[in-house]
Image 1 (cartoon, rainbow, N blue to C red):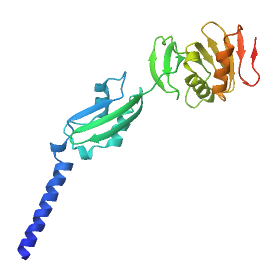
Image 2 (image 1 turned 180 degrees about the vertical axis):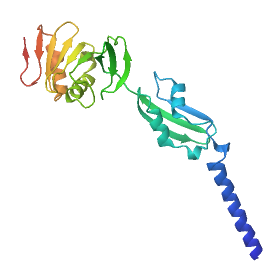
Image 3 (image 1 turned 135 degrees about the horizontal axis):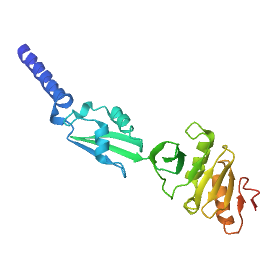
Image 4 (image 1 turned 45 degrees about the vertical axis):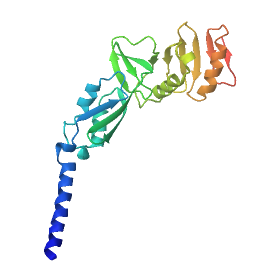
Length: 220
């Protein structure tokens, strides 16, 4: 009886050990496919290469946080989420950064998102994006962040009309429209009110529209 009990114990240990080996060390349950979803302009192959997960690496021991951190080394990506899809697929879901403005830098055009992250540098910026003029462009500059918040929050009917944005300070933002008219926007506060009022005011002829105080607007 004791011998049988000992044998069953050894057998159990062996089964558990074999299962652990299959899951944590064997290529049987290894990564055979890396699936990329959510990418629009960044090539899937580039993301896979950045993820740096070897084929047949045991699924159970893939460092998901490490994969996400490596993938976010691609500056065009805003988020990355890695997950295991058993038995053999590593799924990486990404979201790309969206450019909202162009910042002139040493004769080049830096495309930035709403967080002031440089996504790409081109010789010439796309005409659909407004050019942002600030003294110290960057995520740590209040004027930059306020101006980008305004630009990113503009409704489509207004966004397409803006050619340039100037922000000497966070409270002195102005918009230059494609037809030469100027909008004195002020700070980034009450953006919805300002946008609604401006949409109506633009139907009236003027050179300057001051909506910095939505309760008392002026036209010149």
